[in-house]
Amino acid sequence: MKKYIYSLLIVTALGSVKPALAQKAAYETIVDGVKVIVQPSGNDIVEIQTVLRGGVANYPADKMGIESMAMQALSECGTLKHDKNSFKDALDRVNASVYGYAGKDYSVIAMSCVKPDFDAVWPLYNEAITIPKFDTTEFARIKQDAITNLRARESQPDASIEKMAVKVAFAGRDYAKDPNGTSEILSKLTAAETKAYYNSILTRSRMVIVVVADLDRATIEARVKTMLDGIKKGTPVEIKNSFFRVYNNSFNAEAKDLATNYVEGITSGPTLDAPDFYAFTMAMRVFYDRHFLDIRTNNGLSYAPQVSFSQGSLSFTRIKVSTTMPNKYIRVFDKLVDSTKKHGFTPAELADMKVTYLTGFYYKNETNAAQASSIVANEVLHGDWKRSLNFMTDIKKVTLQDMNNAFNKYIGNIVWVYQGDPKKVDPLLYKNGTLNNDNPVSN
Image 1: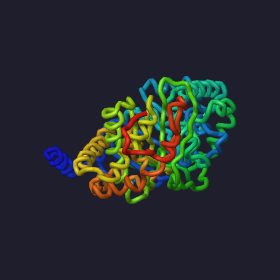
Image 2: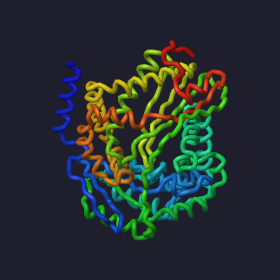
Image 3: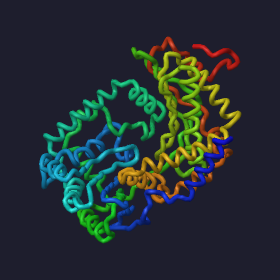
Image 4: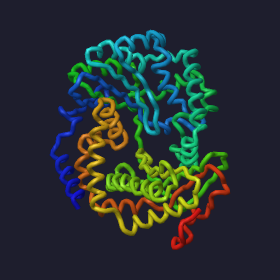
């Protein structure tokens, strides 16, 4: 009881604190049709992130990885004014960075420097975006590095089971595509083809620019306008949220000679605009703790059992374990889900998680880069960047009933995949649930 009261006191205190990432009022402005969101930082760090919407929807499955390679090439292959070495040397002299990366729903081209070096770094950032060279020799180098990294990752069981789960669960959907591609696809990509692709998606209609820095508005607008002058308008791109529903439990196995067996399940989650989005977010964080306690501590079935809610234009829930006893795991898991649905979560769990979630969010967002990334995600996916600053109100509104209802609504049938010894697992337990919950749990 004391713990519950203490947690409520902390939540109340948090409600009276102005978020650390909003020292001065953030604002938005439109420059040549592109939304520019500015969050004054209160420090001497300049973080700028330019977003290109679309992600995996931009390219067919046989070109997976092309956008990721394009993002890497912007800073690794030089520009029309600087070769790769002189570009890197110029950044190194002021300890600044320019880099790009690709995701499921959008790509980001970022720069980071200290304020006194902004005038030196901005031209390099501008060049990387507007006049990248895609040098064939350097492109071949980064392509080989990407292939090596992919093959190394594919040899890791955790990465392998995740890739299999996504491929099976989202078959026929854009989300089945891996932004990093495959070694086979990357090996066929050319610098010219990748450059042409990049030029096709570099449009003002796809762009959002986020600035987290103490720069005056006139400076920001003037620099952005100069960058946009050579970029075509293009056709507007809208990221549409889609709901993922699993109608029947399923089980797909792949025999592998591993030290242990890997199990992953994927099921539903609310869309980003669903009214129970935050309630489900809180529910899954509490369920992660319950799952960890039951699977590892109480039953010793897995060293690092995981439960997560993946949020994007297609949101979903992921459950993953490595275990020598996959049959016993699914029995324990089913009982845990049934118990949670029957008895619900507790007031103490909700109060504690509100504290943990809010304090963790603000701790994580102490850096300018994290603040910019949060604003980007909320603007591109939720259509409202201000959620990154004002979401505390929504978290505080979540009730115990909201959380219980959300868990019961979305946690149901599951797409299960398995890699390991096929003799160790009974597929029926995963397809049909525990056959007899009254029996002692055994493998």
